[in-house]
Length: 417
Image (cartoon, rainbow, N blue to C red; front, side, top):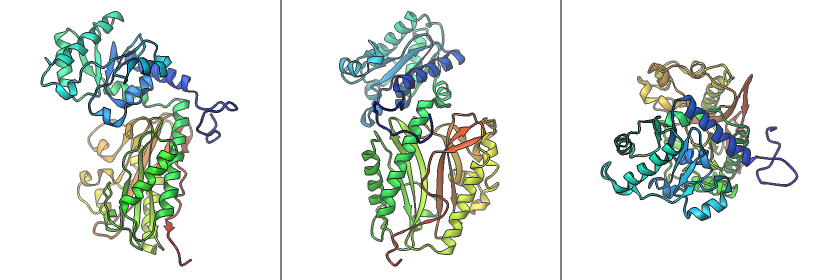
């Protein structure tokens, strides 16, 4: 699929995102990883993995209650439990066939121990499904529930061996399919619409929280199904680095860094930082901006299939004293990266702390999507700059997915020009 060649909506005159293929290939990849990891099945409450396996969207208020979950045997198809009114969900999701079932109690809300009635009912149903697919003697991967210890205890009493299932689903999702990549391009384009609205709105007196609201409104107008709060820090809030927003008003000469993070189009996230100036920037601010941009692009410059996350880290400062601190734990997020897809933080993770902890390097592969981010700000200084781009790893380099201009510090609100 040629980058940027297609719009986002379904039409009859072009072949765009192929949703049947998207669903089919995601399930194939998950089942292949379940087999590779020697599991009999996966049982997940994680909203991203529920979507990966079934395309069902768990709304934000329902995530904490854990009413929805999915079971998938290595040799079967996914079952969705708790899909609203099951018959209506099944009608709207015909690819699920008769595998949309009612919720089974609400143990996340009611359980005190592994003997909870709802936990027992869920365990009984899953045990029957495992027996039906002949995998009852094989490990069951549990993923995405705060009640993992209770479920593990209940399943073991039933004779079912349970293991941590998150790594299996993480690995299944690490390489994106062609249709996932197409959706990642769209969500990154949506972030540009948000930045355009934000840049137009920057002027003295507007507050950080106002800019967050303007950005979120633009994202939903572009068809996003969800977005996290944007990061918006201005003026003295930019140094030291933080990731929040307040009701602080913008003043002339303030730097403002903004992260369109967790903006979700059909489940797929963007995570993009840009830094602006309210009015004309000083030379010192421009120099700090270039320091951050050069750091970011040094790391991006080594991205290609066959390189590792440690190759990226090697391009960044080799001591926390660069930012004025003695401990890497103080500046862990100052130069880092992460995979991105159905979650804001997919694998792999790119961090000096990972290397120092003795974890092995991760080899980059074509089809991974990375968000790389850097920060420049001198301890005790007035300003900080944060920048981030999203890239698709290719055989010979990367495709830049985030196109909002980054070459120089953008000056907004210039009435005197």
